[in-house]
Length: 239
Image 1 (cartoon, rainbow, N blue to C red):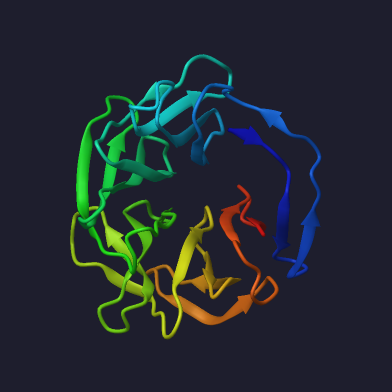
Image 2 (cartoon, rainbow, N blue to C red):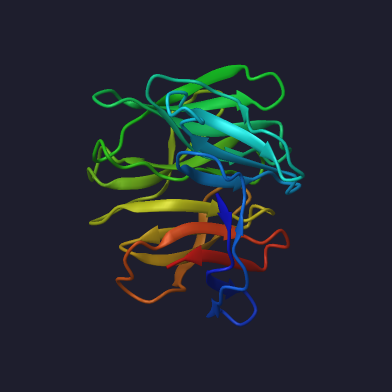
């Protein structure tokens, strides 16, 4: 895992994307095997990520303190646990459990005691795709990209933690919509549609308001990793 300053900021006031140049690159947890899907805790004191462990045979979600020390394995699986996302209060992490040939699982893990809960199956358009998760503003659900039975593309759905039926937030017409990011105050939704980053207003009931605003150029490959600033005024993404 490395900390870097590369990407683009989109600022609500100017509504213009700005280049964010690399200021520094700091290695964190210099141990064997790739660590992917890093996610900061709400208080920025811990980092969750997907890792195979030092020996390469202990896949799961790990949590490490930014003040130092060894990572703590929070989950274990015979497949892959990916896309960790912290709850608003920092007590739980939502993630995807991936097994080839089977539907993926949307899971919850308690950060303190490691207890697990399976929320529901997640069906994607291909077996090799995964998507980032975003907690809703009220902390009662997760926004995730799943196969839409109506269009067969990946639309955005809100999945309640009570296991109820998913509610479509944004319908994909001809392309996959992915990488949802809900602002900390729950009033904005960022997402990627056909390699373009959009933002759109969210109502208190979780429905979309107004028209989407494109904040990146068209057709920029490998765009994603959307993250809101704590004050809701900026959205950073990698392009």
